[in-house]
Length: 223
Image (spheres, rainbow, N blue to C red):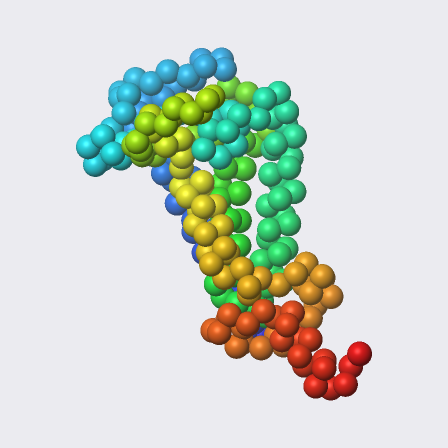
């Protein structure tokens, strides 16, 4: 049991380190661009954008009122902030319960948790920290701009990929990992009932833990 607890702590440490990286990059970018707030608006003193790889990859400072990748949430901002808190707590609980399961699933949840908490900090605290909005009404700092072929389709009009940050990237990486190893993801019922000793073969050979448990029950004559 102690080894399992130590193992799961590693993934929480991964989340914390990613959250710190996300927050450091946001504050560095804000300082480098010379951003200042006046009321609810902000101004940029030093740069409009910084080319990293020509026009393909640039740093462009924006403050996002809504969700990841600039998705707007309208007037329900406080609901989004409160939902983010609940979701982060649920992800932390889920990650803790994964101590008997695949390390790849743990990595996926750890990355998503880091992304959720990283942007949550912006929404909850940045408004009061930078003195432009009350608690829960802060804006998420985005700065990574990637050029893509122009897309003009109905109401969709993109000349570059929606500007994002490290936290958004963590969520994307976590989701991709979980999609790859989806057969190894345990159900909520299994975690809630604290089903232990799931064979490690599931991690290496892609065997679904639910199937493995059913096979064990059939061998023991359990109906």
